[in-house]
Image (cartoon, rainbow, N blue to C red; front, side):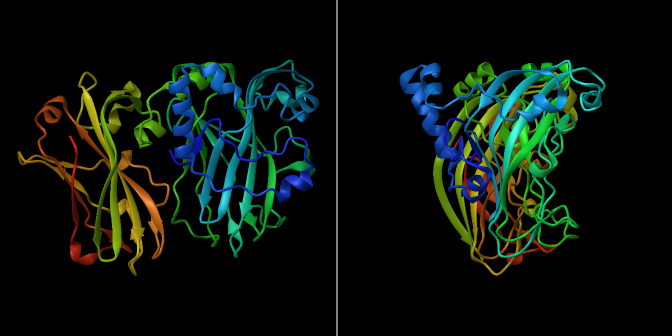
Length: 410
């Protein structure tokens, strides 16, 4: 949630020149607070249209080259002038500053291959920005994607489509196309091409935009310290209204990968339980209990359940500050949930996202834990305790295998 919000500004530049755009700096963003503020405005005023007027919208084409290079008819369907979609990878910033959804028809023969051999389709044009504020060069593969029905059903962006060669969002190393020097800063387009069938899918799901988290300073480093940043993707006025007025759920993988639809049963935010172990400070920030209507094609991710079973999820959020001398692997935290009746539940690792996967000494991050419950288990759970840990790092257990125990509201 900290990475996205509608209606709050990343300073866009309107009529500024490309040179001026290159000098614009991305501000510090607290998108979770920004989204909450916008939702509060809607709840107080009860008028989505009035709230939307506070966010500028444009009728002009974000990328006029789309019409010029395809020689097609371009109909603008939706423009989001100022989304907040930012992935901050320790000073290597990748953001989507603006995007537009268009329908394109009657394209020229050269463009038909881009449109899957059809004479038209739909194009999402994203104005993206890359900034390297680190002191070292960074390798990064700049391929964002749109998730449709699930993680396998994706549309990958392309920086070459409908953009003149001298305007492409490229690195400053011709011999190393994925290498960005310290101080690199540029805006450019990335285009996503959808068929009629793919566009229609968005009406029956909750599409997402994903910014990859593969920034690294060594070319052959495949440890993937950062996870991908996932954002809700309103693609029309109607989907924007639905997004802004719907409940806010923790972004576990059930939400991020469209594995099912959640219904909120109970939530407690701002819990603030703080415990420490070996120099690592862990704050239990909040918990939510939800009923999950699992998509039939995703039942294999919920191995304990049949298609007719009711599925409930307990998602807990933690903030972690690593003040120890150890490197922490957040995916190697072997937590369990237990209650006063002696019932024990293990975490569902495949349903847990990690915006930051590895915490070096002095770094901080967030961790979600997800536990799945049957209807009977949810009914009988009593005084649950979440045992956070043992911790893992560098292929070993840390702090002599000890852990932290948090009381969970229920």
